[in-house]
Image 1 (cartoon, rainbow, N blue to C red):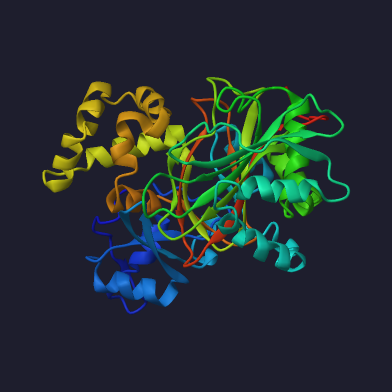
Image 2 (cartoon, helix red, strand yellow; image 1 turned 90 degrees about the vertical axis):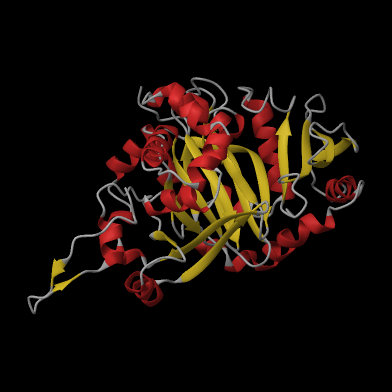
Length: 428
């Protein structure tokens, strides 16, 4: 899809030629909106006046997209009713999207929880600043574990850091009723960029990396117990029957969350394109991820690795001689694509590598490709109470996603791995 291409005029009642550039962009058959997400479009400095007028009269907000010092342009979020295809379709189509590893936004799914968690969310939003300092995390966890009814104790207050460039502190704990088990909590920066003040708090078990998708249910459920103690949103989230009933119906099996990661995105922070697959076939491992937005807003680019490969080919085919093509030549992107030709499977394999492999300089480059994906329907803004499902069936069938902060201040969200539960109803 080429959003800059001339659009055909449509006749008005008076018989004269007129056009609605916004409606035509949203109606483009090549646009594939994320179900549940309000339409999102890119806004460029060289857009025509008619287009700018349409955006100004319909836009809910204009978002500035910057991450780790790189400018990615602007985007406008529009009313949901402008794009009927963005509404949630019938359950059978949502199950099809799950099988195809395409994202699904459950808008306002948790909004009923927000009023009762006002104080807890205020404290959680400020928590990562209180954790700054070499011993702050250990002191915080020791205080929590010292409360009556706590199920854990700190056994290693200053564990070795797995990623010294980004990790700030790591603490190992053990459950009181199973002291042989070990779980850990890690506080880390989102990146090593000097201006990125975003952070995350991750709860895991075993050896980081090797055991991220381990099939040990007991350890996974121990991390979930710890998350419920540390993160006040975890209890209401677990008990939200409507949400989990919807997720089970979409996935066609009972799923349970574990391996929680709390995120504090701030202006200029976020995540480059990545995925949550750990092996060629994750059918019995992590079945997907659930991200819930609790404070502030984030803007996501999310699409299956197969769709991203197709969009890369489409974008590259439209490149014209000039500075952008020269940039991609210098970074090796064009030679990589020339090597693969039109083989989308090879491109998928490359995109699934850390940092999107040799195609990272394209997919994470800046406003051109970011705006192209947004106009193609692959963008969504998450508001407080929204939940985003990211299905995963292995390296060849998973959701690639990229995140930008869309708030002026600190926002708070929770990411959870989804695993087959005790009483799975999956049809085999």
